[in-house]
Image (spheres, rainbow, N blue to C red):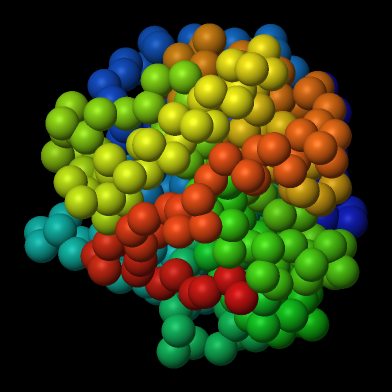
Length: 330
């Protein structure tokens, strides 16, 4: 599979890598054995980078990856994220980017992953009241100590990226990007390319909508992120599904799995983009990986864009309770 740089100093990773939220059952039930089997399949398919976070399953995703690294010893790099605190007693979450907490989060992630260094550590959400210069300065110290290899930022604005990059080299920015979430095109794709920063696209399959089997909101469990997401509401979902159905028809005309076509579209947008689809099914991951070798023409891109109405998608990207610490990308 094609490899791309995570920042100007690397590492080089597969252009389709694996988002690991689904290892915890966040989008449907799974087991540890199934999760390990998926990771085995990912490596077999050429995936060389795994993306997780300490809050995914409250550490469960990191623990599964740690077991995978210990028992399989694959040649993969690992990114994780920290900076969101969860209060078990109340169920509340809040953002904490204090140097003391980030160091604690990194130490806990190192323990769960069973490694001496985290290849790429992201600030999962930005604490608005804390200067980003202070946050990146603390992470730069941890990088010099050898605990992390590179610094990343998640769901931040282009201006925050520029400020952070003046303090220390930022390797990657991670945010949502797909045919139904294109706000990165306003400013962030241009800014990351200019600074030599990778843009890591999560949810490149529109939270399952651009796969061969779009989700049915009636089947969502209470744990499922989409249950409270505005784009899956009774008002918005039927309109979004109708628009996506036209994309499915185009994929069929082109002889492609919808997921393959959606991933190829994301990767075509810029050379510094890395896609991290998340799935529980090895066959779904295989369809995503096929997108790395599908070469789209300008005519293909025009046809793809033309199937979606100007109003698409309907509904905000996050519910109010889901957008904690998110900055607008523009």
